[in-house]
Amino acid sequence: MGWAGYPMKKKRMAAARRTAKRARHWRGRLRAEGGAGTSATPEPIGRTIRRLKSELAKALQRIEDLTASAERDFLLDIVNRRRFSRELDRSIAYIKRYHATGALILLDVDRLKPINDAFGHAAGDQVLKAVAGALVSQVRSSDVVGRLGGDEFGVLLWNLDEVDAGGKAIALERAIDELSFSFDNTTVHAGASAGVAILDMGMDAQSAFEAADRAMYVRKAQRRLQAEVTAPERTAQSSPRSSGT
Image (cartoon, rainbow, N blue to C red; front, top):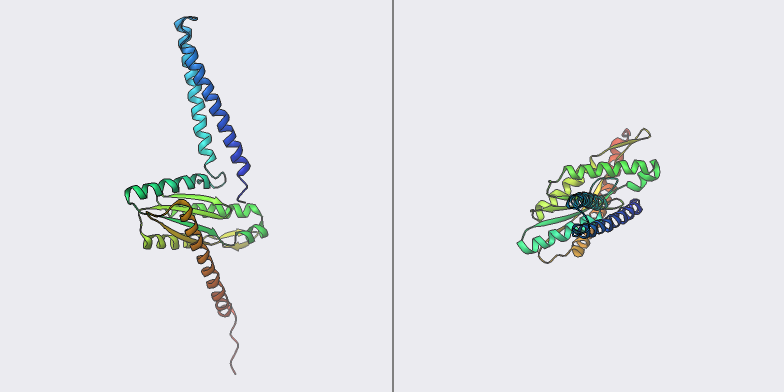
């Protein structure tokens, strides 16, 4: 699913490049026709300049719209990996310059593949939309939530220490764990495992991603082990007790 939006993103970027080329063309026309005062009367020149300025403004707005569209996930309406990486670079630069604090949290959605296999990709898309909504609802407007590809999400948080970041990661896991879905009269749950990397003076974007990714897979193994331990207990609690002799 991570590559589902890639062709569309390529088309958007190609459209942005074409629009930028047209904008450069109109800039040249504007300069050329604006200085051709010897071959036309002032009134036609003024109309031409106004027309070219209007067309240039529309082209520039189109470039801005296409660029913004190319940096968002078309399914979930949050930033994509390209934009998220840019935001991470900017955050690390700010942290190094002003000695600020921040954290990167990576989340991997659990059990998405079985949901896709059992109920189809439309069901999986519904799960991803709900996960994105849960993440956005748990963070501040100054924080950044992005889809990094497939079933992986990133959250970029400002002004919090390691303890607070760990608490936020647990809260995000809990918010996703509490989501429930009904497909074909069957109730299913997804869940997510979160890994945290604290952004400090010695961190760069690649090392931040690697540290959070390692922590995420450690957490995923912990959650899997917890599920294996609690599953027999739940089975035993739900089974009727046999009478003693």
